[in-house]
Length: 329
Image (cartoon, rainbow, N blue to C red; front, top):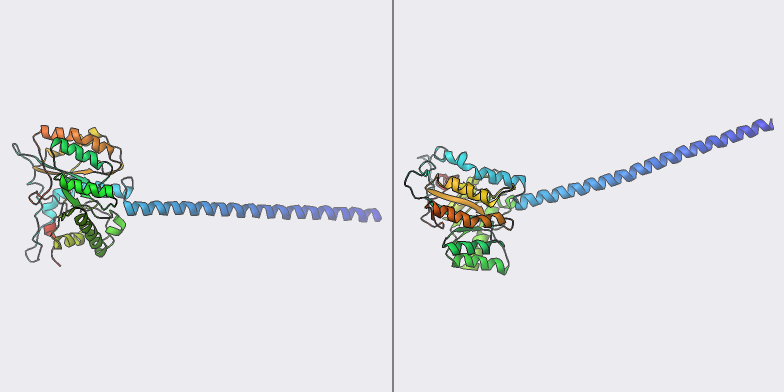
């Protein structure tokens, strides 16, 4: 009897130890699961933070490596093959509505070059000044060429010196917004007006030059702005500001790799099509290939008898959306 009781007690102890081990295993599993969950949540939160930061950077700066910037620039750069060819059709002016008395944009068909026509070429540089600007100015000076610089707002004495040098050397200083931040620039008419006043006043303060020409970041045909672009065109019309798009692109706007040779080929191939060519190039820190292409581009254009000029009040206006088609409000 006593032996049976002892065996029963031993079995009970073994059972309790098994139960204890099972409980401990469950606790370990739950603990490991909780730790892994915390780690996974932390990783996901970090990734979300990184994605938000990158998205904000893309929206604020619209870098050339961003898909949105590429879409905007590509849309505008290809306007000559799509919407730009249809300007005459898309901008018919109603006789019953009031429109601004502004510079008339050239009709694409009328701008097509014929045999014997002189090719007027306007080299324009967006997004500067940058560390590449002095080299660009040196090359232009060496070849006796005047160009147009659509600049953004940059502080610092080195940038101010470059603004002044652009003016002093006879180039056209033009506006490309102060911030170049699409998300804020195109968020509302008020935001656009504030940015415009900031860049115009800043350039006047630095150079004494009253800038009268503007280029929309992404072009007037960009697909990024939530506000109808005619609202911003209306703002410029009210101020007597002429904006320029382009009908020839060097191809240095997108994130895709490009070479100086390809840039020259892109420009020369399209310039021959038009009487007036407004050429889109970029003057940013990352545009070393553009600088390298500039001298052979100038030589190629001169070789074909093109006349290289800076934008002024007599320049044939190239616009993807005609400013004159925007009615008064």
